Image (cartoon, rainbow, N blue to C red):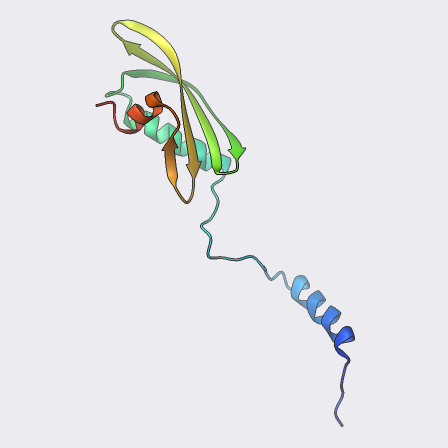
Length: 115
């Protein structure tokens, strides 16, 4: 004896079973997105690694805001140039796909170690 179930009855049951099992229906080929904490950590690492060459005396704050391309991370830093101490803002766009992208001249110089 063969039991047949009409499609319009079987589909909702199959869909319910799929979702109940916790299966993900997302495309896994895209790179994983970074969290806010990871984006901030990347910028802190850049600032720490280039502190001596760029005369960065302290990092006052690092904050991140979600943007379409990833995270816009602002670093407020104190720099000593020519004997005077100034507070500057360095800005990066951080993404899993493109890494850290400098958004102004100061940030580009810091990213390259201030040649």
